[in-house]
Amino acid sequence: MTIPAEAEEAIKRFGISIEDYMLPVHGQIQILSEDGTILPDDQRGSSPGHQYPIPSDSELLEAYRRLVVGRRVNDQNSALVRQGRLAVYPSSHGQEACQVSAALCLREGDWMFPTYRDAVAVMTRGVDPVEAMTLFRGDWHGGYDPHEHNVGIQSTPLTTQLLHAVGVAHAAKLRGEDTVVLAMCGDGATSEGDFHEALNFAAVFHLPVVFFVQNNQYAISVPLAHQTVAPSLAHKAVGYGMAGERVDGNDMVALLAVLDRAVTLARSGSGPLLVEANTYRMQAHTNADDATRYRQQAEVEAWAAKDPLNRMRQYLRTTGVLTDDVESAFAGDAEDVAQQLRDGLSAEPILDPQELFRHVFTEPTPQLREQAAFLADELARDDQPREEH
Image (cartoon, rainbow, N blue to C red; front, side, top):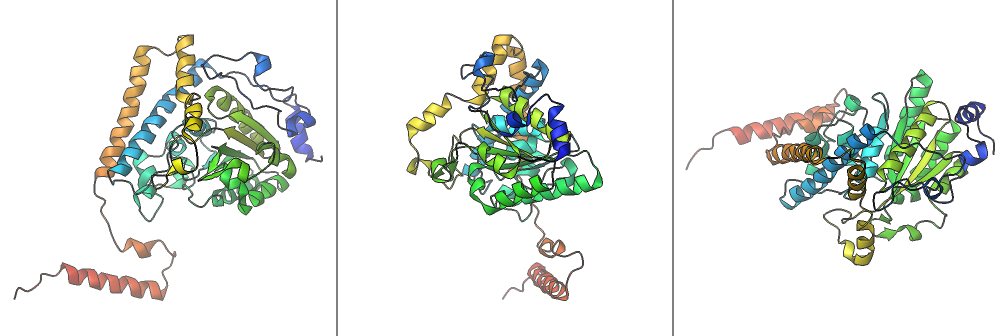
Protein backbone atom coordinates (compact mmCIF):
# COMPACT_ATOMS: atom_id res chain seq x y z
CA MET A 1 0.00 0.00 0.00
CA THR A 2 1.30 3.46 -0.91
CA ILE A 3 0.81 6.26 1.60
CA PRO A 4 2.15 9.81 1.49
CA ALA A 5 5.82 10.15 2.44
CA GLU A 6 5.05 12.62 5.23
CA ALA A 7 2.59 10.14 6.75
CA GLU A 8 5.14 7.34 6.67
CA GLU A 9 7.71 9.57 8.34
CA ALA A 10 5.26 10.60 11.08
CA ILE A 11 4.26 6.99 11.75
CA LYS A 12 7.85 5.75 11.96
CA ARG A 13 8.62 8.38 14.60
CA PHE A 14 6.35 6.35 16.89
CA GLY A 15 8.37 3.20 16.22
CA ILE A 16 5.56 1.58 14.23
CA SER A 17 5.94 -0.32 10.97
CA ILE A 18 3.56 0.62 8.18
CA GLU A 19 2.21 -2.94 8.06
CA ASP A 20 1.38 -2.99 11.76
CA TYR A 21 -0.03 0.51 11.63
CA MET A 22 -2.45 0.08 8.74
CA LEU A 23 -4.20 -3.15 9.72
CA PRO A 24 -6.47 -3.38 12.78
CA VAL A 25 -5.38 -5.67 15.58
CA HIS A 26 -7.01 -9.11 15.58
CA GLY A 27 -8.85 -8.35 18.82
CA GLN A 28 -10.04 -5.11 20.29
CA ILE A 29 -7.83 -3.00 22.52
CA GLN A 30 -8.82 -3.50 26.15
CA ILE A 31 -6.87 -2.52 29.25
CA LEU A 32 -9.48 -2.71 32.01
CA SER A 33 -11.33 -5.98 32.60
CA GLU A 34 -15.07 -6.05 33.26
CA ASP A 35 -14.42 -6.42 36.99
CA GLY A 36 -12.24 -3.31 37.05
CA THR A 37 -8.77 -4.87 37.16
CA ILE A 38 -5.88 -4.10 34.79
CA LEU A 39 -5.35 -6.87 32.24
CA PRO A 40 -1.90 -8.41 31.72
CA ASP A 41 -0.04 -7.11 28.65
CA ASP A 42 -0.69 -10.29 26.66
CA GLN A 43 -4.47 -9.93 27.11
CA ARG A 44 -4.87 -6.33 25.99
CA GLY A 45 -5.34 -7.05 22.28
CA SER A 46 -2.15 -5.16 21.44
CA SER A 47 0.39 -5.94 18.74
CA PRO A 48 3.83 -4.44 18.02
CA GLY A 49 2.17 -1.48 16.29
CA HIS A 50 -0.52 -0.97 18.92
CA GLN A 51 0.98 -0.26 22.33
CA TYR A 52 -0.66 2.07 24.83
CA PRO A 53 0.52 3.43 28.18
CA ILE A 54 -2.05 3.67 30.97
CA PRO A 55 -3.10 7.30 31.56
CA SER A 56 -2.09 8.94 34.83
CA ASP A 57 -4.22 8.67 37.98
CA SER A 58 -5.12 12.36 37.77
CA GLU A 59 -6.32 11.96 34.17
CA LEU A 60 -8.37 8.90 35.06
CA LEU A 61 -9.89 10.56 38.11
CA GLU A 62 -11.00 13.60 36.11
CA ALA A 63 -12.36 11.32 33.40
CA TYR A 64 -14.34 9.41 36.03
CA ARG A 65 -15.77 12.67 37.39
CA ARG A 66 -16.96 13.54 33.91
CA LEU A 67 -18.36 10.03 33.58
CA VAL A 68 -20.43 10.48 36.76
CA VAL A 69 -21.73 13.81 35.47
CA GLY A 70 -22.53 12.27 32.07
CA ARG A 71 -24.59 9.47 33.59
CA ARG A 72 -26.55 11.99 35.66
CA VAL A 73 -27.12 14.12 32.56
CA ASN A 74 -28.58 11.14 30.70
CA ASP A 75 -30.89 10.21 33.55
CA GLN A 76 -31.99 13.81 34.09
CA ASN A 77 -32.72 14.44 30.43
CA SER A 78 -34.75 11.24 30.19
CA ALA A 79 -36.83 12.49 33.12
CA LEU A 80 -37.28 15.90 31.46
CA VAL A 81 -38.69 14.16 28.38
CA ARG A 82 -41.30 12.42 30.53
CA GLN A 83 -42.18 15.79 32.08
CA GLY A 84 -42.67 17.37 28.66
CA ARG A 85 -39.69 19.73 29.05
CA LEU A 86 -37.82 18.08 26.18
CA ALA A 87 -39.46 16.94 22.97
CA VAL A 88 -37.06 14.05 22.45
CA TYR A 89 -33.81 12.76 23.89
CA PRO A 90 -31.47 10.14 22.39
CA SER A 91 -29.84 8.79 25.54
CA SER A 92 -26.20 7.70 25.59
CA HIS A 93 -26.65 5.79 28.87
CA GLY A 94 -23.97 3.09 28.78
CA GLN A 95 -21.91 4.94 26.18
CA GLU A 96 -20.69 7.75 28.43
CA ALA A 97 -17.08 6.51 28.41
CA CYS A 98 -16.95 7.09 24.66
CA GLN A 99 -18.53 10.51 25.06
CA VAL A 100 -16.17 11.76 27.75
CA SER A 101 -13.04 10.32 26.15
CA ALA A 102 -13.88 11.94 22.81
CA ALA A 103 -13.95 15.39 24.40
CA LEU A 104 -10.94 14.92 26.69
CA CYS A 105 -8.56 13.77 23.95
CA LEU A 106 -8.71 17.14 22.16
CA ARG A 107 -6.86 20.40 22.68
CA GLU A 108 -8.69 23.70 22.99
CA GLY A 109 -8.07 24.63 19.34
CA ASP A 110 -9.22 21.27 17.94
CA TRP A 111 -12.73 20.68 16.58
CA MET A 112 -15.34 18.07 17.43
CA PHE A 113 -18.31 17.20 15.22
CA PRO A 114 -20.92 15.24 17.21
CA THR A 115 -24.03 13.26 16.36
CA TYR A 116 -27.47 13.71 17.91
CA ARG A 117 -26.56 11.15 20.63
CA ASP A 118 -23.40 12.95 21.75
CA ALA A 119 -24.81 15.54 24.17
CA VAL A 120 -22.53 14.34 26.98
CA ALA A 121 -19.48 14.82 24.73
CA VAL A 122 -20.72 18.31 23.82
CA MET A 123 -21.12 19.26 27.48
CA THR A 124 -17.76 17.72 28.41
CA ARG A 125 -16.20 19.93 25.74
CA GLY A 126 -17.50 22.97 27.65
CA VAL A 127 -20.85 23.81 26.05
CA ASP A 128 -23.48 25.04 28.51
CA PRO A 129 -25.79 22.09 29.35
CA VAL A 130 -29.01 24.03 28.74
CA GLU A 131 -27.71 25.36 25.41
CA ALA A 132 -26.75 21.82 24.42
CA MET A 133 -30.34 20.71 25.04
CA THR A 134 -32.02 23.54 23.15
CA LEU A 135 -32.26 21.51 19.94
CA PHE A 136 -34.08 18.68 21.74
CA ARG A 137 -36.51 21.11 23.25
CA GLY A 138 -37.85 21.68 19.76
CA ASP A 139 -36.26 25.04 19.04
CA TRP A 140 -35.41 26.09 15.50
CA HIS A 141 -31.66 26.39 16.15
CA GLY A 142 -28.89 24.27 17.66
CA GLY A 143 -28.66 26.28 20.86
CA TYR A 144 -24.97 27.14 21.02
CA ASP A 145 -22.26 28.97 19.08
CA PRO A 146 -20.06 26.33 17.39
CA HIS A 147 -17.05 28.65 17.44
CA GLU A 148 -17.09 29.23 21.20
CA HIS A 149 -15.82 25.74 22.00
CA ASN A 150 -15.09 24.42 18.47
CA VAL A 151 -18.04 22.03 18.57
CA GLY A 152 -20.23 21.52 15.53
CA ILE A 153 -24.00 21.63 16.02
CA GLN A 154 -25.37 18.19 16.89
CA SER A 155 -26.43 16.51 13.69
CA THR A 156 -29.71 14.65 13.27
CA PRO A 157 -28.97 13.42 9.72
CA LEU A 158 -26.66 10.46 10.18
CA THR A 159 -23.44 11.53 8.49
CA THR A 160 -23.61 15.11 7.25
CA GLN A 161 -21.35 16.11 10.15
CA LEU A 162 -18.53 13.97 8.75
CA LEU A 163 -18.45 16.07 5.60
CA HIS A 164 -18.39 19.22 7.70
CA ALA A 165 -15.54 17.75 9.73
CA VAL A 166 -13.32 17.02 6.74
CA GLY A 167 -14.11 20.47 5.35
CA VAL A 168 -12.88 22.13 8.53
CA ALA A 169 -9.80 19.90 8.57
CA HIS A 170 -9.05 20.75 4.96
CA ALA A 171 -9.35 24.48 5.69
CA ALA A 172 -7.11 24.15 8.74
CA LYS A 173 -4.47 22.33 6.70
CA LEU A 174 -4.55 24.97 3.95
CA ARG A 175 -4.07 27.65 6.60
CA GLY A 176 -1.23 25.79 8.24
CA GLU A 177 -3.09 25.49 11.55
CA ASP A 178 -2.23 22.91 14.21
CA THR A 179 -5.76 21.52 14.33
CA VAL A 180 -7.11 18.00 14.69
CA VAL A 181 -10.78 17.26 13.97
CA LEU A 182 -12.67 14.49 15.75
CA ALA A 183 -15.58 13.30 13.61
CA MET A 184 -18.14 11.22 15.52
CA CYS A 185 -20.70 8.79 14.13
CA GLY A 186 -22.51 5.56 14.95
CA ASP A 187 -22.44 2.14 13.34
CA GLY A 188 -25.54 2.94 11.30
CA ALA A 189 -23.78 5.92 9.74
CA THR A 190 -21.18 3.63 8.16
CA SER A 191 -23.91 2.45 5.77
CA GLU A 192 -24.42 5.98 4.42
CA GLY A 193 -22.77 7.40 1.30
CA ASP A 194 -21.52 10.46 3.17
CA PHE A 195 -19.37 8.14 5.31
CA HIS A 196 -17.56 6.88 2.22
CA GLU A 197 -17.13 10.37 0.80
CA ALA A 198 -15.80 11.81 4.04
CA LEU A 199 -13.24 9.05 4.60
CA ASN A 200 -12.10 9.04 0.99
CA PHE A 201 -11.72 12.83 0.90
CA ALA A 202 -9.81 12.86 4.21
CA ALA A 203 -7.43 10.14 3.01
CA VAL A 204 -6.81 11.59 -0.46
CA PHE A 205 -6.09 15.05 0.93
CA HIS A 206 -4.18 13.64 3.92
CA LEU A 207 -6.24 15.48 6.55
CA PRO A 208 -5.83 15.46 10.36
CA VAL A 209 -9.16 13.79 11.11
CA VAL A 210 -9.93 11.05 13.63
CA PHE A 211 -13.17 9.27 12.68
CA PHE A 212 -14.67 7.93 15.90
CA VAL A 213 -17.35 5.28 15.32
CA GLN A 214 -19.41 4.38 18.40
CA ASN A 215 -20.63 0.93 17.48
CA ASN A 216 -23.58 0.49 19.85
CA GLN A 217 -24.73 -2.57 17.88
CA TYR A 218 -27.97 -1.11 16.46
CA ALA A 219 -28.95 1.50 13.87
CA ILE A 220 -32.31 2.13 15.54
CA SER A 221 -33.71 -1.40 15.10
CA VAL A 222 -31.22 -2.76 12.55
CA PRO A 223 -28.44 -4.89 14.09
CA LEU A 224 -24.88 -4.55 12.86
CA ALA A 225 -24.98 -7.98 11.19
CA HIS A 226 -27.62 -6.63 8.77
CA GLN A 227 -25.43 -3.64 7.85
CA THR A 228 -22.05 -5.21 7.10
CA VAL A 229 -20.25 -8.54 6.98
CA ALA A 230 -16.81 -6.96 7.35
CA PRO A 231 -14.72 -8.45 10.21
CA SER A 232 -15.13 -5.11 11.99
CA LEU A 233 -15.96 -1.52 11.14
CA ALA A 234 -12.30 -0.69 11.80
CA HIS A 235 -11.35 -2.91 8.84
CA LYS A 236 -13.12 -0.47 6.53
CA ALA A 237 -10.34 2.05 7.14
CA VAL A 238 -7.65 0.21 5.19
CA GLY A 239 -9.75 0.40 2.02
CA TYR A 240 -9.37 4.17 2.16
CA GLY A 241 -5.65 4.07 2.96
CA MET A 242 -5.85 4.88 6.65
CA ALA A 243 -5.28 3.04 9.91
CA GLY A 244 -8.14 1.42 11.82
CA GLU A 245 -8.36 0.57 15.50
CA ARG A 246 -10.88 -1.40 17.57
CA VAL A 247 -11.28 -0.57 21.23
CA ASP A 248 -13.57 -1.66 24.05
CA GLY A 249 -15.97 1.28 24.19
CA ASN A 250 -16.88 0.56 27.81
CA ASP A 251 -13.23 0.64 28.94
CA MET A 252 -12.41 4.27 29.64
CA VAL A 253 -8.74 3.52 30.31
CA ALA A 254 -8.35 2.00 26.84
CA LEU A 255 -10.47 4.70 25.19
CA LEU A 256 -8.35 7.51 26.60
CA ALA A 257 -5.15 5.75 25.56
CA VAL A 258 -6.31 4.89 22.03
CA LEU A 259 -7.90 8.25 21.24
CA ASP A 260 -4.97 10.17 22.68
CA ARG A 261 -2.57 8.31 20.41
CA ALA A 262 -4.87 8.72 17.41
CA VAL A 263 -5.07 12.49 17.92
CA THR A 264 -1.31 12.71 18.49
CA LEU A 265 -0.62 10.79 15.28
CA ALA A 266 -3.06 12.91 13.27
CA ARG A 267 -1.50 16.10 14.62
CA SER A 268 2.00 14.89 13.75
CA GLY A 269 1.13 14.32 10.09
CA SER A 270 0.04 10.67 9.86
CA GLY A 271 -3.18 11.57 8.06
CA PRO A 272 -6.67 10.40 9.07
CA LEU A 273 -7.47 7.43 11.32
CA LEU A 274 -10.61 5.45 12.16
CA VAL A 275 -11.31 4.25 15.70
CA GLU A 276 -14.21 1.84 16.30
CA ALA A 277 -15.44 1.65 19.90
CA ASN A 278 -17.62 -1.36 20.71
CA THR A 279 -20.28 -0.27 23.18
CA TYR A 280 -24.02 -0.62 23.73
CA ARG A 281 -27.09 1.59 23.80
CA MET A 282 -28.65 0.49 27.08
CA GLN A 283 -31.87 2.42 26.60
CA ALA A 284 -34.18 2.85 23.62
CA HIS A 285 -33.07 4.74 20.51
CA THR A 286 -35.13 7.70 21.74
CA ASN A 287 -38.20 8.07 23.93
CA ALA A 288 -40.27 7.37 20.79
CA ASP A 289 -38.73 3.91 20.34
CA ASP A 290 -39.68 0.52 21.79
CA ALA A 291 -36.41 -1.41 21.95
CA THR A 292 -38.15 -4.58 23.21
CA ARG A 293 -39.46 -5.15 19.68
CA TYR A 294 -36.02 -5.91 18.23
CA ARG A 295 -33.67 -7.01 21.03
CA GLN A 296 -33.79 -9.47 23.91
CA GLN A 297 -33.58 -8.57 27.59
CA ALA A 298 -30.83 -11.14 28.10
CA GLU A 299 -28.65 -9.20 25.66
CA VAL A 300 -29.26 -5.96 27.53
CA GLU A 301 -28.42 -7.59 30.85
CA ALA A 302 -25.18 -9.03 29.46
CA TRP A 303 -24.05 -5.56 28.44
CA ALA A 304 -25.16 -4.09 31.77
CA ALA A 305 -22.42 -6.18 33.38
CA LYS A 306 -19.90 -4.25 31.27
CA ASP A 307 -21.07 -0.84 32.50
CA PRO A 308 -18.20 1.67 32.06
CA LEU A 309 -19.09 3.60 35.21
CA ASN A 310 -18.91 0.57 37.46
CA ARG A 311 -15.66 -0.61 35.89
CA MET A 312 -13.92 2.72 36.43
CA ARG A 313 -15.27 3.08 39.95
CA GLN A 314 -14.00 -0.37 40.88
CA TYR A 315 -10.55 0.28 39.41
CA LEU A 316 -10.12 3.68 41.07
CA ARG A 317 -11.39 2.32 44.38
CA THR A 318 -8.89 -0.54 44.20
CA THR A 319 -5.99 1.81 43.52
CA GLY A 320 -7.09 4.06 46.38
CA VAL A 321 -7.42 7.14 44.19
CA LEU A 322 -11.19 7.30 44.62
CA THR A 323 -12.25 7.85 48.23
CA ASP A 324 -15.70 8.32 49.77
CA ASP A 325 -15.12 12.08 50.02
CA VAL A 326 -14.03 12.36 46.39
CA GLU A 327 -16.98 10.26 45.23
CA SER A 328 -19.35 12.47 47.22
CA ALA A 329 -17.85 15.58 45.65
CA PHE A 330 -18.29 14.11 42.16
CA ALA A 331 -21.93 13.27 42.91
CA GLY A 332 -22.41 16.87 44.01
CA ASP A 333 -20.93 18.12 40.72
CA ALA A 334 -23.32 15.86 38.82
CA GLU A 335 -26.32 17.08 40.79
CA ASP A 336 -25.33 20.71 40.14
CA VAL A 337 -25.48 20.04 36.39
CA ALA A 338 -28.81 18.21 36.75
CA GLN A 339 -30.21 21.19 38.67
CA GLN A 340 -28.96 23.51 35.96
CA LEU A 341 -30.80 21.43 33.37
CA ARG A 342 -34.01 21.35 35.44
CA ASP A 343 -33.98 25.10 36.03
CA GLY A 344 -33.04 26.04 32.48
CA LEU A 345 -35.45 23.73 30.72
CA SER A 346 -38.35 24.35 33.09
CA ALA A 347 -38.29 28.09 32.39
CA GLU A 348 -40.66 29.10 29.62
CA PRO A 349 -38.69 30.37 26.60
CA ILE A 350 -39.22 33.92 25.41
CA LEU A 351 -40.29 33.57 21.80
CA ASP A 352 -39.86 36.16 19.07
CA PRO A 353 -41.60 35.10 15.84
CA GLN A 354 -39.51 37.60 13.86
CA GLU A 355 -36.47 35.36 14.46
CA LEU A 356 -37.87 33.23 11.66
CA PHE A 357 -36.60 35.81 9.17
CA ARG A 358 -33.36 37.05 10.75
CA HIS A 359 -30.99 34.22 9.99
CA VAL A 360 -32.02 33.02 6.54
CA PHE A 361 -29.90 35.37 4.44
CA THR A 362 -27.26 37.95 5.36
CA GLU A 363 -29.25 40.41 3.27
CA PRO A 364 -33.00 39.59 3.42
CA THR A 365 -34.75 39.14 0.09
CA PRO A 366 -37.75 41.32 -0.85
CA GLN A 367 -40.02 38.34 -0.27
CA LEU A 368 -38.69 37.81 3.26
CA ARG A 369 -39.10 41.50 4.06
CA GLU A 370 -42.67 41.34 2.82
CA GLN A 371 -43.42 38.25 4.91
CA ALA A 372 -41.79 39.77 7.99
CA ALA A 373 -43.85 42.93 7.59
CA PHE A 374 -47.03 40.91 7.17
CA LEU A 375 -46.28 38.96 10.36
CA ALA A 376 -45.45 42.15 12.26
CA ASP A 377 -48.81 43.60 11.22
CA GLU A 378 -50.65 40.46 12.35
CA LEU A 379 -48.87 40.50 15.71
CA ALA A 380 -49.68 44.17 16.18
CA ARG A 381 -53.36 43.48 15.52
CA ASP A 382 -53.31 40.71 18.15
CA ASP A 383 -51.85 43.13 20.69
CA GLN A 384 -54.60 45.72 20.21
CA PRO A 385 -57.43 45.67 22.79
CA ARG A 386 -60.66 44.21 21.47
CA GLU A 387 -63.92 46.09 21.71
CA GLU A 388 -66.55 44.56 23.91
CA HIS A 389 -70.02 44.16 22.46
